[in-house]
Length: 177
Image 1 (cartoon, rainbow, N blue to C red):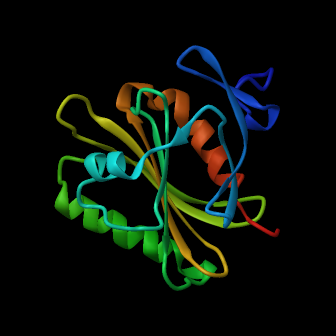
Image 2: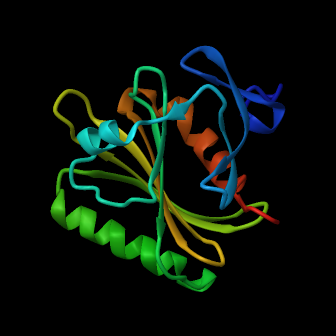
């Protein structure tokens, strides 16, 4: 973040791709509140199936940019996970991905004590057909669900998003908190 708070989403905006992007609190599936770009829209189920062909969850929500190159996905898994188990869930998925995609580049992993929920995350860069993709995968637990969430954009845009994604992850609260 620079001195004037330009990339602090609590100010209602961040500089992404050289332009001012408005942020606002959004409610996802009536279960969580999270600060996200306000112009991003729900991706239609048919587009979710095309973009994520191996993905089968009925409860998944994907919010996307107008050009569909920047995506936020939230998958509400059945059952609960204790707060202390989030790092284990994160590390297991990271291990599976590293084994399945040896060419992925690991950037970071950590835990954020957010406004309402503890969030475990990792950051990786994965190869793609046209451009490498930056992925910020994060995990948190509500009273009812383990939520597996992800953010993706082209790798050449990651410098604009890395700090912002930590702020987004820290903004998550369960509805009712």
